[in-house]
Amino acid sequence: QVQLVESGGGSVLAGGSLRLSCAASGYTYSSNCMAWFRQTPGKEREGIASIYTATGYTYYTGSVKGRFTISRDNDKNTLYLQMNSLTPEDTAMYYCAADSRYRVCGASDWYAPLRYNYWGQGTQVTVSS
Image (cartoon, rainbow, N blue to C red):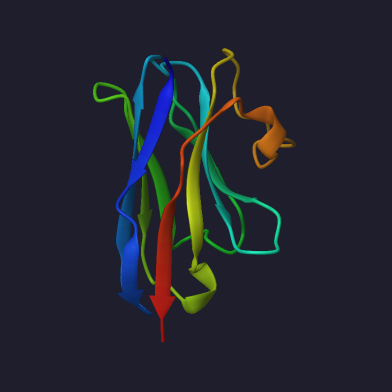
C-alpha cells in the first residue's frame, strides 16, 4: 500500500523556520515528480514546490522562492521542505504529493494537483505575527 506521511508542522512566530518531512512507503520514488502543496480554507490547493527525484531539478512558486527549499533523500525515500523567513501568509495545511508515473516535473503542470496520484494527509503550519 502506497502511503505518504507528512510531519514537522506546528506553530511558529513570523521570521521563524520549520522543516516538513514526507515519508513514503510502499513505493520507491526514484524517478518521479514529487511536490509540496498548501491549502487554506475556502481556497484552492496551491503548488509551491516540486522536485524530480532522479536529478533534483526543482520548481518553486514565486511567493516562496528564496525562502523555501525542497529536497529529497532517496535512500530514506523521504521528501523535505525547509521553510525559512515564514510569514503569517504561509499559514496553511501543507501536503506532499507524488506522481508514481515515471516522468519529469513539467514546467507547465508541476503545480497542478491533478497530475499527482498520491497524497499525504497534510500537516498544519501556523505562523503568527
